[in-house]
Image 1 (cartoon, rainbow, N blue to C red):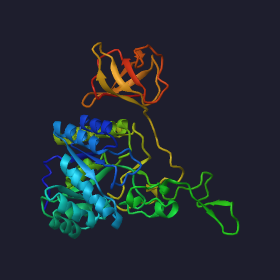
Image 2: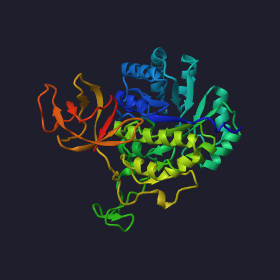
Image 3: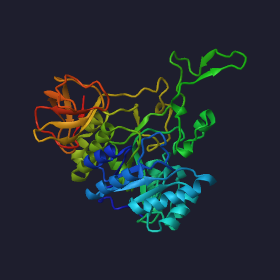
Image 4: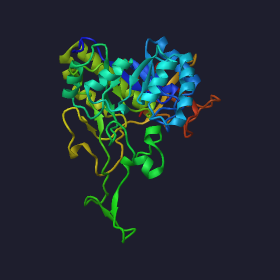
Length: 410
């Protein structure tokens, strides 16, 4: 059945910490997905303690937003008892849904949290409408499409599944060489299992060929002075193709990046929120601003962009063979945490800046503006010219009023 395309798709944003969750909510996310300290696929992310999860869920719900918790590992026997205990604990803080890929973990969730909404992770390789029906018949509310599906295939999915079974698809972020993430490279090379949340990202490494009898003599896989990054995919970016995503029947637009900074989350959330709202206000307005969306989304850290599999199988143009360097057009300086009685902005320093610097202020729903740093004080309220120490608390005069949750970048 076709989805009602008059209904805006959900904008689903990742969060690595409580600060980033609050940023996502402030900048326009409809829902945020997070990981606990166990059973998610981002073991190297900061992740949330149970207390932080509780605070984050309460904050999101206070603002009318949802929080989904990832528990999408491929579980081994040794994991099952812990999963059961973990789900019992989650039942006390009530996230809006669990994101699961493993049938055994799904079974435990249905037993322990029978009224909890369950979303089936992309890790489950969901590539056909019978798979969607299978999970829907077992009680799943939503299924995340595999990254190797085209928009045409997703439209066919939508036409062959119940109207109330939701489709969630990635619109932005890093792409895995194994597409939907079921990769064994990391486990084979380093003993750290990607399917248990410990991926070392060997797809981003530089590779050469070494002949058995000539150890130490490195021959490039491709004749290039830089070597070859043969598994290194470009990032996905669909900001200028939102109408096509809507018309395919996708219910939730998902952004990848549970290890990203608050600046990254603020930029991506803000631009996709604006683009979605513009499209539903007027398709002509959306079309007229495509160049702006693309320019602004490029200010956050990214590799070169592609459209993934949405318009057909990628060619060699979907890979980065020369390097694995991120493009970075803006530096994250911090987020306004509080405003003092005399109008100074309290913030935690993320990167060094100086009195006299011109910086940009990102407010969730206002144009980006440039201001000059007029004065800066340390925690003892002593004037300082710069902030060389990471994570130091500062009180800054930007020469004009700012608001809590504003992002400062340079």
